[in-house]
Length: 518
Image (cartoon, rainbow, N blue to C red; front, side, top):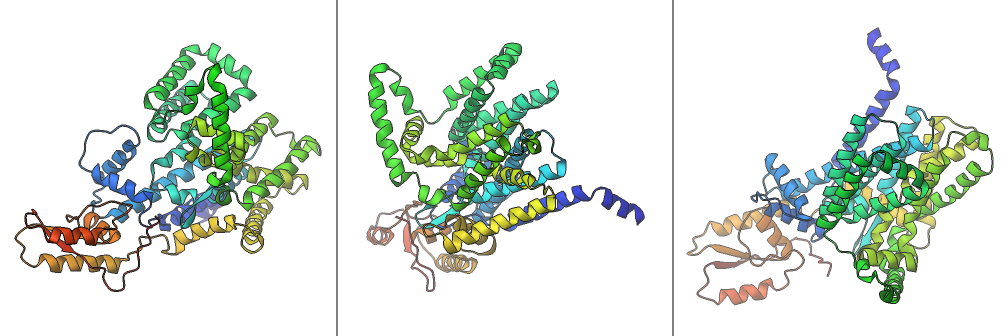
């Protein structure tokens, strides 16, 4: 017994860390994916369903669907369990996101501070990761959701992978590692670059943006590394160039303007599309929230403290690396100004420029700024730091809910997470009993004798259940609409030469209305 007590005392911090990770894992486990019909996750679930029996790896973004189809097939999750499949994808990709952001935060923070103990590094990284999950969000038609709820059943898992790839890259430049470790990192970066470029290339553009900022801060280091290790760096550069050329699914329009006579046209397009974006298409009314403003205020205070006052307290801060992350945090501003929004609209597309919010490292700086300000008052207790972080989150949540007179965005962010974990608000709007009732109706129909095979006609959500849960033939399934199924049934009913028997499924009593978002 004494040995156990001694072990617990000597490994107290490690056990606390493991316990926190376990609680987070349980929290993710009980969370639910956003499955309101007919949003984009149904497109992805249907595509995964189609690749269940296909063995040839497709090109482009379809590779994500293919990979998940094979994983779910290996796990023996039947295609009829489409909601279970969504849950598995949601949990897996949320865990990948958490671990990727935590890893990036850990690498960044331990390089900002030249000497930081492991326990403090853990909590700063943890708070940075939590901030990432609650700070980025957007609105679409009826729902305001944090990023992870929109994209946990989506090929945009590439965003967390981008953060992981960036962390590996920063270690190559900033940290002393053995050649074997560096080679392992390089292999991972090349594989991730290939995956990101094929599945969703916008995140590779984020990576290039970080490399460009890095080049501005460390141009001498980059030149030295390229010339010193040219036999490694040149093949890497050529490989990335090859990937960009051959696996980039989206072709940037800016390459069409690389001539002197076309520059005025380019400028006009930047002005026009930038005007669209700041006119509302940048979705700033949903993306910018009160926590971002708080981080900005804390950032100004932290910069003044580090560079003007009490500098002896901040000797362990690597100021160049600190400024690097402040600069990349400013990527948040890209969609908010006409000419930056217009420029990146031409580089990508105007209707995805709002996603540049997600390239910002602003989440990383929240705990960093708080820690810097805390040190000014010589209150370096880790317990005090954690209490302070909790208080700030509570205060900003309360302000957003009760005092903000515009959008209440941070409150909505937290509310979306709460709904995902503790309510069924984001689940498929037909419950288990209603889905079973559809099955009973089908069973009753098929108990009768028909001369021809049956084809079912029904409302879009009921058709989805019949087709993808009960695996029955249905009339013209289309995810986004099925408004004319009654008319089509009436037309089919009067055709005598059809190879099937049309059957109309009436909307059962007590079923909720289907609020299609068009």
